[in-house]
Length: 278
Ligand code: FE
Ligand code: FE
Ligand code: ZN
Image (tube, rainbow, N blue to C red; front, side, top):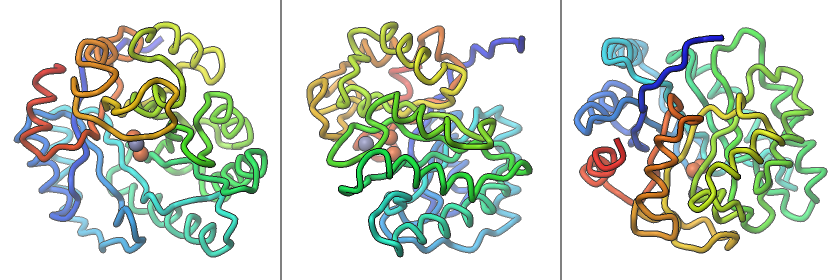
């Protein structure tokens, strides 16, 4: 068995507008040792050309400063189980292009929202999501693709651990797949991660397997357990609370995973939350 990494990796979502090196510098400025970024405009689809020198400059920082894995985020408009053919086609185009772009930062994570089936039914949705992954994943890629746990808002898939398991079950290259657990989303989905983290992790382990859990989105929630709303709050300003969130970040079964803050903050606010949670 590999030696357990007991470093706390914590960072936040950063703007990719200034390129890779500028994200590395922003992360360092707030004592982050991991971060997340959108691979392209979160609401649209257009991706900026990658400058290989810029990517190399970030890789140097990541190595020198011993960063944990980065957790890139797919655009919100990516929906592999839309009822619309052109939306599903965009999901394929964007994700396959993102896989190529991710190889400029090899060995990191790429997280996406499994999708909303918009009335097609969960079963069809799960099949379409798995089908997309089976067309995209290759044995050569160094990126691990993560399904994000969702709040179960509307027709979102991924609001239960069982749905995530069913997607992974249908993917051929399972070694390229993992899960990113969002604390706000799982709580909204009905898993009481604040009051019973051990119980929720045991359930996750039984259904999906803890070895699949590769990253965490650390958010407080504006709503109660099971609200199916998905509204993030600053750490300590929501229904989960600071103590509960700090326990999750330092949970012995989770230490070593990248923890990404997606709270409503600018850079200084993220810096304070990182300080609080370390
Ligand atoms: Fe997300
Ligand atoms: Fe999230
Ligand atoms: Zn969310």
